[in-house]
Structures are given as C-alpha cells and as structure tokens.
Amino acid sequence: MAGAVKLIGSYTSLFCTRVEWALKLKGVQYEYVEDDVFNKSPLLLKNNPVHKKVPVLVHDDKPIPESLVILQYIDETWNDNNLLPRDSYERAMAHFWAKFTDEKCLMETFTAAWKEGEEKEKAMESAQESLGFLEKLIQGKKFFSGEDKIGYLDLAMGWIPLCLDILEEVGGMKLVDAEKFPSLLEWAQNFTEIPLIKERLPPRDALFNYFHKIVGLKRSNKH
Ligand SMILES: N[C@@H](CCC(=O)N[C@@H](CS)C(=O)NCC(=O)O)C(=O)O
View 1 (cartoon, helix red, strand yellow):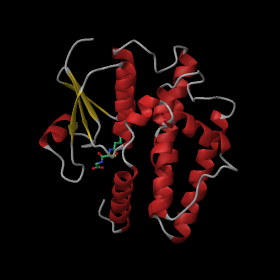
View 2 (tube, helix red, strand yellow):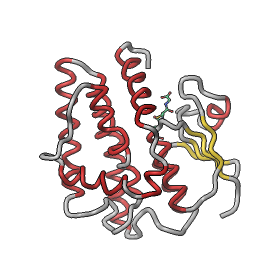
View 3 (tube, protein in one colour):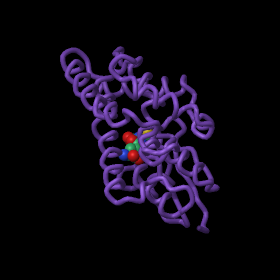
View 4 (tube, protein in one colour):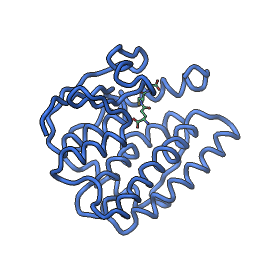
C-alpha cells in the first residue's frame, strides 16, 4: 500500500507504543513525529481536533486517531502478517476484550493509582476484579491471539508489561502478584521477550516520571 505514513506520538505513551509495535510487525516504513502532550503542537490539534490526543496515524494525508482504531486500520491496509483473527466471532471478541482492557482494566488501574483512602481501596478492588477476567482469558494460552505469535489483542494488552508495575509503584499499591495472576504474568514475560517488542519499550524511568507527573496533576485536579 503506497502513501506516506506519519505517526504523531509521544514516546512515553503506551497507546503510541502499541501502534509502533503494529507498524513494525507489518514492516511499514513511517516517519515518527514526537509531540508534547503538555504543550500540544498545531500538527496534533489539526489532525485530532476531537480528542486532541496522541497517537494519530496520518496515511496519505488522511488522519486516523485512537490507537485501537489505528491498529485495525493498519491490519486492513497492510495485509501481510494478520493481527486480527479471520473468524468473525473471534474478531468481534478481540475487539470486545481490547475495549475492556482500555475502558475497564487500564482506567481502573490508573484511578486506583491516583485516588487515596477509601476511594483507592474501591478502585483497587474493581481493577483486580477486571484484571481477573484477563487472567482467565489467557489461561492455557501462550498469547491472547490464541496462536503461537502475537496479534491485535496482545498489542492491546501491551500496557500491562509496559506500565502496570509503574502505576503500582507510583500509586503505592499492589494489584497483581504471581499467586493470583500467574498466567497473566507469564504472558507478560513471553510478550516482552519478543525482540521487536523489546526494541520499542520506553525507558522505565521516563515512564515513571510521566506517570508520577500525571498522577500528581490528577490529585491536584489539574488534568
Ligand atoms: N483512547 C486513546 C487514548 C490516547 C491518550 O490518552 N493519549 C494521551 C497520551 S498517553 C494523550 O494524548 N493525552 C493528552 C491529553 O489527555 O490531553 C487512544 O487509544 O489512542
């Protein structure tokens, strides 16, 4: 598929990282443009006027926002090395779990990290309950794709090895341990050992500083 590909991203963004993983898995050449989410560029605002967030993929001058939408677009546009299942039921469920991981697991983990007191306890319970569904989903499988290689859902779950333990540290909490989440942790280990994934893992200290900053802003009601 011809046409220039540009990714407007931020190197500490887990949403951008999953898009970069997909582009690399597909062997797509792209230009990477770093944005500052605390001081957004006119380029970002022009290409994502609705949410004003990274990532935005610009293909042939056409912008595509939202990381999960971008993953699907990449999969449909560059046909080699399928990311989504071909079976329509399996594909629907991959979308279901990807939405679930972003809207429930990740959001509840982030909420638990910045809340305090009783609200934190409640958010931690919700996050653990949601993450428990992922533990069940991955049991008996090497990858969320259900295959021997990673797919769309593995990329969507990539925030877990990337920043779950950082959010735990920043938030002064423990959500996932080897006793209750053995399969999820084994998957995280298998996932991060893949060379292509490992090559584009943001440095831990940069991620820590980023989350430390946004948790602080959230607590002071400024984000
Ligand atoms: N649902 C969006 C989330 C993207 C997102 O939250 N991006 C963050 C960086 S990690 C951002 O641009 N934040 C700027 C803001 O919230 O104003 C996606 O999947 O792409």
